[in-house]
Amino acid sequence: MTAPPVVLVPGMLCDAGLWAGVEPPGPVVHARITAPTIGGMAEQILSTVDGPFVLAGLSLGAIAGFEVARQAPERLAGFCALSTNAGAPTAAQLAGWAELDRLTARGGFDSAVERILPTMFAEPDSPLGLRFLDMAHRVGPGTFRAQLAAQATRRDAHAAIAGLSCPVLVVCGERDALCPPSFHHAIAAHAAEATLRVLPEAGHLLTFEEPTAVATLLRDWLRLIR
Figure: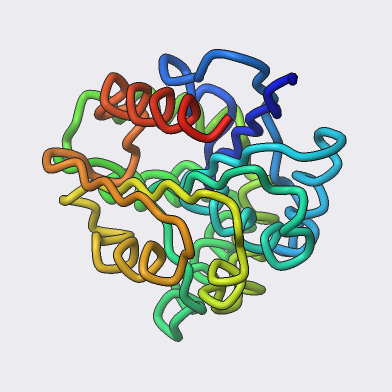
């Protein structure tokens, strides 16, 4: 029996480069999330492949994945959620995204990205920041604004997670300032079949900071579920 493909879904301001060095063996497909709503992003993911698949998403990629779980849980053979949040947006988040959108619309894309950069890593001055900046500029201001708009359409996804019958792997960084471990404990608690792993030295961009650990976790988990 052929193993279902793994669809890798990047986070905000991220592209396929997010997964460099951590791609699992077997068939892998990279999704793009450019729609201005979470529902539209879920449709983009679902149209990437036919039939069942394993979804692995980081941050906004996992949030769009939660909507896939709501719309088409039968398509998911497994779900790996990294560095994410299944809760509805807070007023502070909505205000922050709106400000970033206004700044970008005025031609301040570089300044907006610079504001986000310190939240990406356990150490704000991480040398990995240059890789993130390169990736963000490949994504560009148009997609960034669509992703900000999509963030505002999020809703609480814990019920969708609870409705999944497939295995769920939840991975986070102990030092993630954006999506702390408590968010991931909640995700794992709602899933029927969950594995939770917390990486002690990592921040938000796990695949950059701890590629060997993430690659090993993903490979070993896939070996068990495929």
